Image (cartoon, rainbow, N blue to C red; front, top):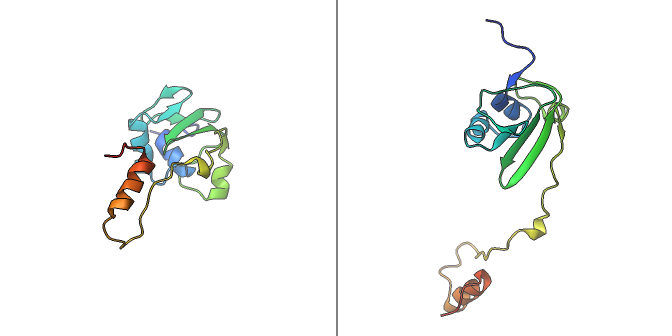
Length: 127
């Protein structure tokens, strides 16, 4: 049976154009409902064609890309950028991320003052 040259599996395409690090992660994203093609949730074996809109939710961010070229094998970053049009919203600035109280490694257990400062930082009521 000859392979259809006008389509590629969505999990293989997502991995090939470097939207995920591994094909297994791409397949898991599809199975988890984090990938949509033209608005529909898809399975890993669903075919994509040029012109399809692929939405991938990953790490709290949604990537929206339109397929312009099909690739079956993983390609370099320059070639991968030519395979889709990125319509994703810009990522949030790093300053908006929540500050987390971190201690230096090897500093030991927090003192009572440190613990109270951490509770204040997390917005917990003092005892």
